Amino acid sequence: MSETKIANRYAEALIQQAITENQLKAVAESMTFIGSTCEQSKDLRNVLNNPIILPSQKLSALMQIFSSCNKLVLDFIQLICNKNRESLIPVITDAFLSLYRKHEGIEKVSVQTASPLSNDDQKHIQQYVLKATGAKSVEIDAQINPTIIGGMVIKFGDNLLDTSIAAKLRKLKKELNIA
Image (cartoon, rainbow, N blue to C red; front, side, top):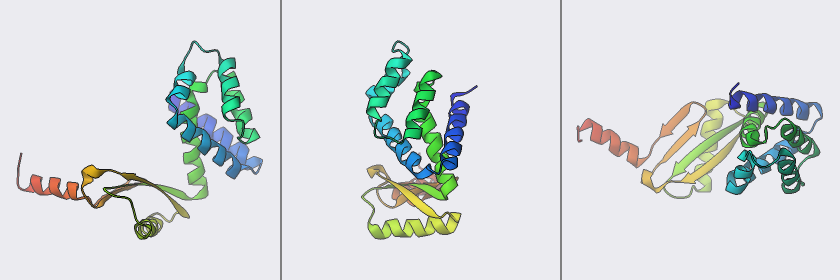
């Protein structure tokens, strides 16, 4: 079975348990913290993927690092380590957060701009995505990418809206058959 399928099953189990115990928001906050910690710490990812380090040692380290997390999440981490699946924690976290957003009607939007987004731009993007998707709320992940020169690239769901100057230049170059 693929890692993604395994991760999705663990994530589905956790979200169902969180809903049952009426702790979904607290669990989501803890999983967000775990996901960002794993993303930012290459050392933690290396430890999780290292087969030489015993699962019990990994569990001990994880319990110290994430001691402030929700008890349900800590129990979940313990289960994952007992099943020798600790290397999947980042993938499980992503899968859980995706399921959480879907459950709560939150649309995640990736926006690339050449310079930081203004508050007005963020509001316009939120309104556009809310109207296009019918979501309850929008979570914007804004990234600065100077190679797009100007304009923006917006991705959400299966949608891609590229209004960047770089895209317009590529289109013009293609139309003029410039190699």
